[in-house]
Length: 284
Image 1 (cartoon, one colour):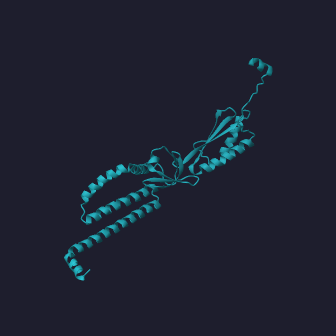
Image 2 (tube, helix red, strand yellow):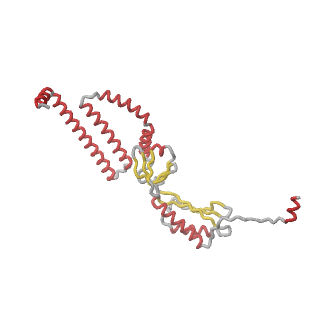
Image 3 (cartoon, one colour):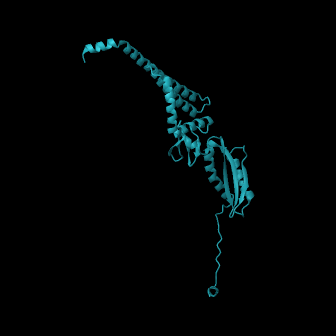
């Protein structure tokens, strides 16, 4: 390309080129400011989380994601405005497009809505052990679209927020204490009072049982093969399973040491002998 042509082109369009360069520089500054604001918001939310002001980490994570997308949209609109695009009409077009996209991705928007509602209601947070539908596990991550769980056997589950919101939810970590029930069957020939004394000794020795509510010991039912006695006690959620597993073994051993028996299911079978001559007569 001849040098003269370039010189003439630059001379003829000097004003437009200077204006274009200014717009490009302005757009670059807007992008940098946007990235700076994203970094500031991220650092603020992380610092708030570290300070422990009582704000749920799930909410902070949601705020980080929402602020990121809001800043991106604002940045795009500002850059288009710098280049002379009519953003008023663009906003109207984006609104109409948003309606169409919303109809096309209603399930995705449903996940977002469900995620926001569950965050506001604090249905669960990271680290909680939850159960919904046929799934249960510890919440590892939570965002606008999905909730990630890890099951007790180490399986990863990613569930849409809408599916969790649409089903009854059990949060085993929400309350600070939980009740455990132990049902022990003793023989009808055993002493109920001996069983009561044995269970009371177990309650007195177990420091992880809470004093309030008071542990209860009761005859739950008179079964076909055993008298079923139930011990109900409360423990803090953090030590629930350790206490439960230990006492399942401990109660059996203490019951047997006290001379009580845990009967197995029994069934009486009666054999009726039919005399051969009587059978032959009935056949005739």
